[in-house]
Figure 1 (cartoon, rainbow, N blue to C red):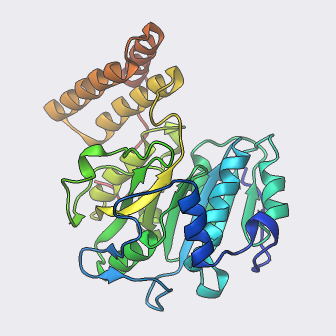
Figure 2 (cartoon, rainbow, N blue to C red):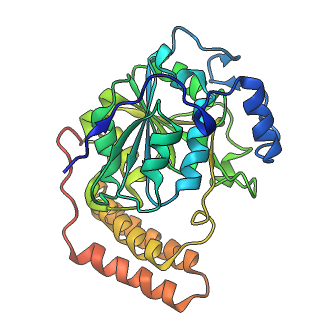
Figure 3 (cartoon, helix red, strand yellow):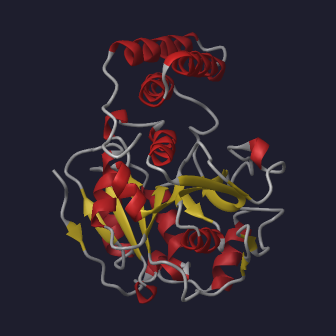
Length: 333
């Protein structure tokens, strides 16, 4: 059952939710030690650049943030979004928070501190289906899908959105994930070696930009995954529906997540099960077997020296093989 959409006021609220000007936001980011190197430069889109301000040519963007039991992280993400002009109602943008029945006061915090946000407070935890619920309520041409501990770097969404608008065949963009505390990349090989816009990218993550038409065509995230690997799955679904997913190392999203560096037993079994399902959904014959085996071995590598971790991986493999994989959505080859 989907929750009722609590419409925001359309105005910037007081306190933590007030709009910051660009200088204030840059200073706050600098004080937190978030970013070095390329940050502060204009973001190259592969076919031009974006140099501040809000372009009238940018598509209207709906941000969907899924929240569960991380009130402080959510507050920080919304504070960052409040300083980005393209998210304003005056420019056709909107921010939608879907709260998965948190009991830590997350929904009430949004009501009190971010009155301009559209809030969907669910009565139960729907896991990744919450993203689909938020997307169905969205009104923008593009969807920016964010975890509650993730926020885009200034200029990145503008550059990525302009690129998507100029390339009708692009269905999605994976933003480049970086950790604000450690300054490490989640795709370390992509930090230096890859230049320009990379085509036919096979993955997505905690910060993804979608053409809403493409999202709807492939059915959004496959909710049977519950958690994990749904992002890679949707990249493959988009490819199967005839869209391209692209990546540019300069289009950045900050991801303040512990799980990205240390994998829990829950992550290992769910992620491994979903990897096996993904291989069964998207590959055939030898490629399917190879995909399952390589994902299985990689999961053991991530488990490190923990016996419980390796047991979780084995559990995931068994469940992935024995249980029926989710049916492929209509319109996806």
